[in-house]
Image (cartoon, rainbow, N blue to C red; front, side, top):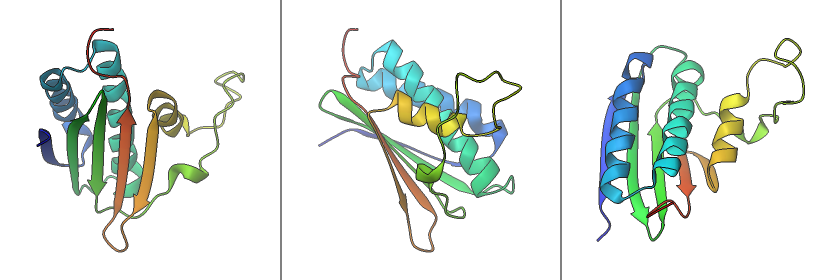
Length: 142
């Protein structure tokens, strides 16, 4: 039976530290390598920040986080009840442009796509969003 770590918390910027600590503790308990754990902490931070700012538009609401190991991979499932948002339509930022030239937004989705092996978004009809993140070869020595 796979070991699952779960956290339910209000989607608020002041809770990002608690969420980061949860990911670090769950990852350590599952044997996640430090480099992979750093990537996962950043990705979850970006995803939850998007939920807070764009999904709930700062009004708060629940976000549920599940972390488990699947072989040498870590699977993280994020669920919220915010308005639906499909990041698949977000353009890749033009990283060759200066910060002054670059269009605002899109870096979070870019980091999520870049730092995970799978990032699968699923709208949950009338019940918010689900984002499944997979980081392969995350367990064991670097």
